[in-house]
Amino acid sequence: MELIHININVADADETIEFYEQFGFEESWEFETTDGETENRYIADENGIELQLSDANGETEFERGTAWDHLAIGVDDVDAVFEEIDHYGVEKEPADQFEAGARTAFVRDPDGRTVELVEPLD
Image (cartoon, rainbow, N blue to C red):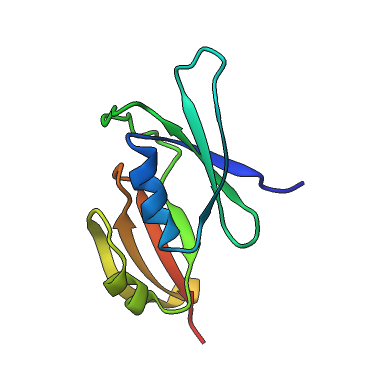
């Protein structure tokens, strides 16, 4: 079994793609539903894991589910990435999480989802 993709609704696929490109994701493919109501665009990391971005045509109010908390992205240097990227809010500044064996920071993507930046502690 393998993880193929995670689907998230987004207000503006172009803006969301620009955000995730900062982490090395690249647009991989797209399709539109047969009713023409939803454009689905995919971005993939270097390992081929994809995020499916379902464009909600400008809808910005999404009900936050109780099971979804955050998306974690591994980086080489949390502090450098935290300072370099354009994000949409800070939830937690970089700090060591010794119990998890990592240095982490939490930012928001264009739709307010939490993205955790993770750097293993040596």
